Image (tube, rainbow over all chains, first blue to last red; front, side):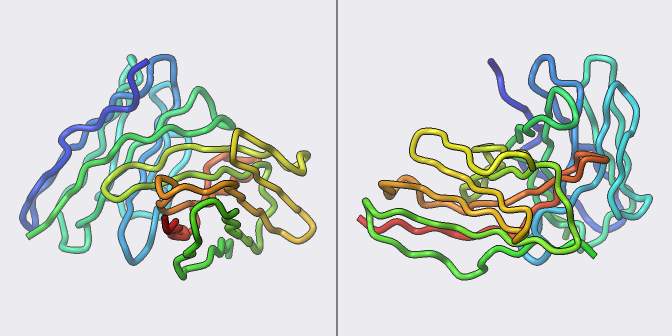
Length: 112
Length: 112
């Protein structure tokens, strides 16, 4: 059974640009969550999608957005990139809310 | 605000010994708690989930306890091996949103 796949693995952008990250969940998983991981803040929750609807949202500015498609694949978009957005962005999927989350290996985003 | 505390200092132990990692939480009444392992440059890997009505859970060499009175979970690895060296993350989740809040993790180093 294939795990959670995130693309791309690495990305370099400059301030002011925007970026889209992609996540393919485990087959049969309808919940997809996104996290930002930095050395200073640890793993911070961005948002969760379930059946194409945003079900939960973390405390991040509106520059961070996402969506989920009918096949459960999800994308995350960050607009007007700032230096502080440099981080490892992780996607996790689960069958439903109270089940274990399974993570991809993330996208390492570096802002120059 | 909710606070998850894991020992920020690395835990160094000798191969074959039992490693015990601690997770304390405040201002929180989690419905369940998860433990993850994370290796450098990789996403977290799910290890165990324990629910609020369970005191203890085991899986092979791993054991988790959950004390809702003390607001604490302990994670044990028996007969530890150098391959167990990694960062271990504690992640309690409330019954409302089921979105886990991650601790900063404890680094475990097992010496041969």
